Image (tube, rainbow over all chains, first blue to last red; front, top):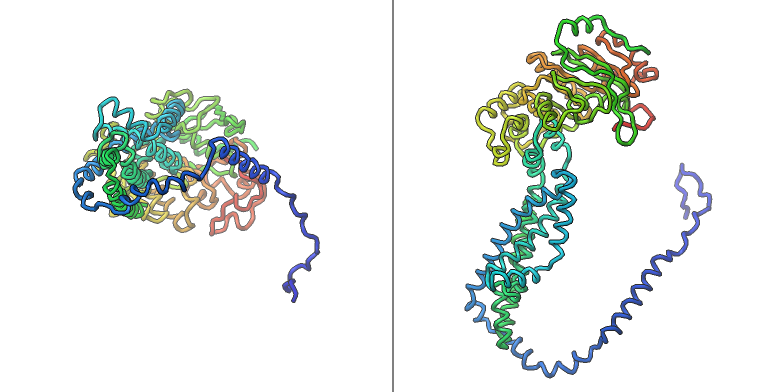
Length: 269
Length: 287
């Protein structure tokens, strides 16, 4: 068997020298392993409770394995509340996010403004959804309003960041054209930038809606109303057969809405 | 080579109002690159000027200083009676409303209709609130339709710009400029992205509306044959300086050799309109 094709130069036989071992990678792996071991020791990690408590929790597990399906339908109003919270929070949150995103991109905002807005959004995003619920539940009391306000804040954080990044990446040509006709900054944003980011923005809004449905559990447990609230109450009264039914239903609902929203998103781009 | 001043153009500039006046204009980019190096020019009202030169010679800079997209670092520049150097942002917006611009890559918003793209030319005459809700008003729409009619693509008004061919897109860009009702039109390599027959057709359109409306036009071109067949006046640039200024007839092969700094090859002037920079081994330093 010959490796030389006709017309090609004969092989000279001198291979390039093999690069040396990548020490950085090995050191990185070693450091990661050391940190993991240290952490396990520090929190006194043990699998013991898994074995010893398994028998103690037998009653709970039995209840969980016999879900009370009828209960899912009995709390239908709370399901609707969850959906309503998600829809309102997505609409309001994303509308505000679009405005903030326009202020947080160097394409549509003066340098000073966009730098400040980037920092403001980063701080705003660093607060998790549960923290927002607890905060708003303390301010306006528990219930759907606290949930809506919390999710709006959460949605602004997600949608504004993603949209601002899309705005950074728009084709600068139309923006330059708008500048060359003497348009003001706001006109440039509306005419040359918003049409370009609209498909991504609508797609992010659907994504945010998906996140909101999924967050409904945490929102309810934190005092924001909806189906999460039901779980909290049932948990407090040890009705595990009701909880397991709700959890299974929640998985199904989230999955269906997820697929629905994903289909719509795919059509947009 | 000292700038050759055509007697014809001089006579014309005496007769007509000067639309664009460069007085010893220098442009230095923040990177230290010299864009323009002491350019003095007078372009009278209604003239069709073609600027030629290698990539990086300052053609693009010359055109972009006229509407303030590139700031002048020294010298004086007056366009349509307005000072461009040292103008405030508001003054620059007023100036730009009167100066249309056509780009190599068309710069249309491809996701919206042709009509909306043309209406962009009416933004200086539309309030911010009306822009936000997209209500341009009947008068502006009449102007936009008239502009589309002039470039012969009125039937495409409600088509998405992305569905048009390159030549059609550049016609929309011309219509956008016409909708501005501008006295000056700048075109930065308007046909460099188009095939030769389409390039010729778009240049013909540009020339026709320029004659019909008497618009002062400054065009950057790479194609020598297009420059010769369409220009009233040709300006040759090299290293930020004007090295030739004369009529299309005066711009013979010898002159082009001077501008490009080397002898012409068959490909440079062939009917296939081969771009000069494509033949050149030097790296393009165009900003």
